[in-house]
Length: 169
Image (cartoon, rainbow, N blue to C red; front, side, top):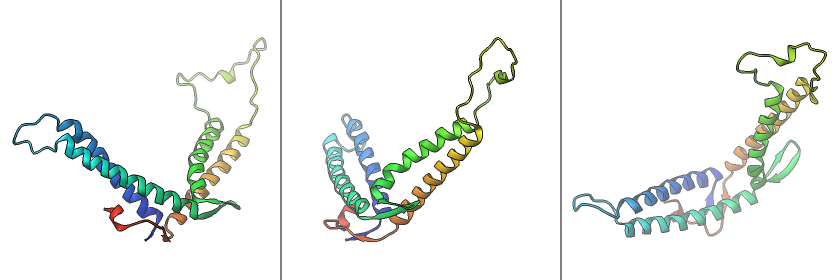
């Protein structure tokens, strides 16, 4: 069956919601009045179990999809799976550099760097604000390039073996 990465993501999101609802109904149905109409734990477990199996099969299909798609990010070729794994770290790297490029002011308004006291030793910055800003911008561009490549790759329709329309229901 042919599918896109977006279709796989959407189906997995819906299945996760269905599984979570079945899990919450499992405990809730243990005690009930005759007119409650709640599912019993046995009924909720059947839905939970079947949904878990669907999720597993779709996640395998998604892994095949992600390993079969190649993307190029700033001249570096990688699988979509690698790009997906690296995008989180790229965002964290950007945040790290931004945090020292524009440090937060002291919440009480004290600016200790302006104190002039020859008897006190002051630590010096090892990375200038400009350098940190440049690194933050470079990290931001890399993270954006990864996100863009992921979006483009997820829109491609690809044939995935063992994938059936029933898994999307």
